[in-house]
Amino acid sequence: MSAGTAALETAADPSGSNLQALRRLRLRWAFTALIYAGALAGGYWLLRDAWQPSRAGGWLLWAGLAALVELAILWGSLRHNHPPDSPILRAGFGYGTALTLLCGLLLALVAGFLFAPRPPGWLAWMPALLYTVARLVDYIDGYVARITQY
Image (cartoon, rainbow, N blue to C red):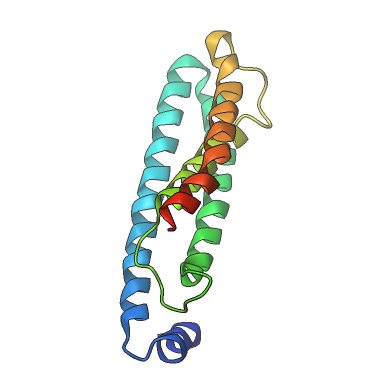
């Protein structure tokens, strides 16, 4: 047990429910990482068939790096998954957080196109489509978090 986890357990919640909640959050993080990995694999598969395999590999590199950064930030923020007025951790992600994670995934997929030449045909619209959907999701995630209070 790390010092941060021990402090989280004893200072904020002597009963240990914070430690249990943190374990459940870590499982949810792993599930989120699997979803990100699946989206990256699906994107690579799509691009490999519609574009050159080397271009798809470059896309996967940059999109994967962006996703790793996002997942690392999420991992480091799990201990802050509590209401502002309570030190008790919530054991899951709310709908607002789920939408924010979706937005992050979409932006990671866009990041794969940053250093690539313009894709051919219909694929040239993919970065704009992904970015537009990410902006729309970002527009509503805070509202959803407020109305669900989670």
